[in-house]
Image 1 (cartoon, one colour):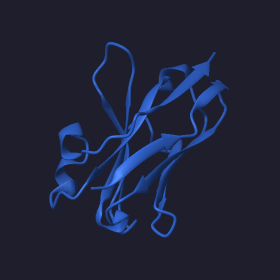
Image 2 (image 1 turned 90 degrees about the vertical axis):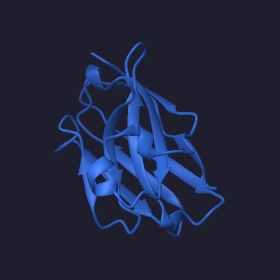
Image 3 (image 1 turned 180 degrees about the horizontal axis):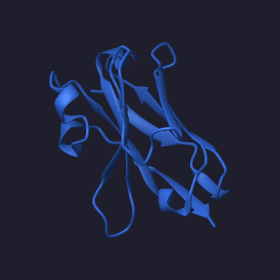
Image 4 (image 1 turned 180 degrees about the vertical axis):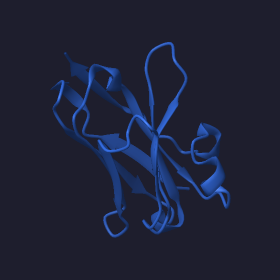
Length: 127
């Protein structure tokens, strides 16, 4: 089973950028789709972006389109989330999860599609 560790979060001013990393160990990373989700206190876990196992095929939430870019390096066993033009509404704990679902095209926004979540990385955007 693959284990995931998120990193790269921090405190940034509105309009700034951060790059999150989701590093994997164990398993065969290239066989997993990966999704980034975020969760603010008292709210449900929310889909942000996803990428298919090959790296060809990406998905974005409406709030992320045009600002965030997901990519992966299967040699480095890492998925990245480049976040630009951040706003205070992006403040949350960001998690990555792995999926081997054959139905990722349909269910990529569903947190239940993913497992082996990391511990999360805090992103705080000040106004």
